[in-house]
Length: 88
Image 1 (cartoon, one colour):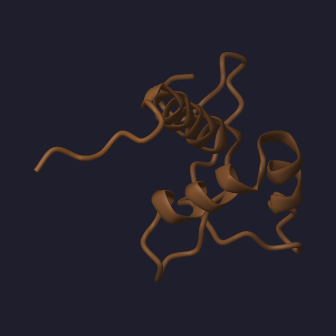
Image 2: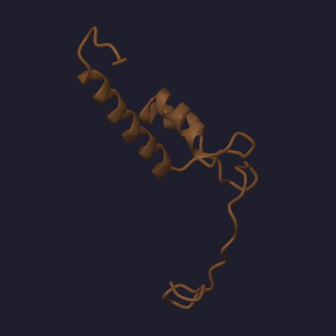
Image 3: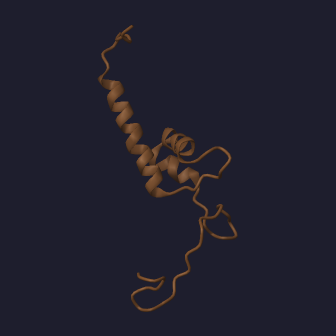
């Protein structure tokens, strides 16, 4: 795609991101994110993706990134010896 056209010459309309809306048919059900990646991932995605005053834009890539991050956190937490304390 170059200059707003596909390879076959069809014009492409680039619009700014918009709120999810059933009428726009751009809704992603958070339940599918929870079922695929777990509730912790959905929570982290909502907290880290956008400021609280802005609506969250659900994306598969964003959910996958949140899942990878949390997986790494849990893996690192499992490596901490039981009874370990923070240095003073």
